[in-house]
Image 1 (spheres, rainbow, N blue to C red):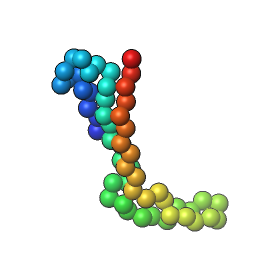
Image 2: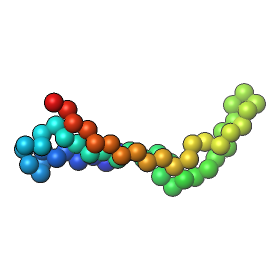
Image 3: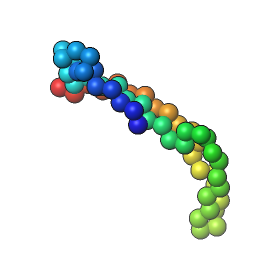
Image 4: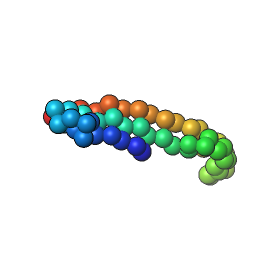
Length: 54
């Protein structure tokens, strides 16, 4: 996770934040087996968010 609080830029932006979350960043593929069922694990996922809290 990487985030930035815009209040550091200017105090009038207090409560406003940008955030980026990533999983499986290098997109490695592995087989996961459980109870006789085998599947590939999750692929790369990147989610960006803009958050405002008042």
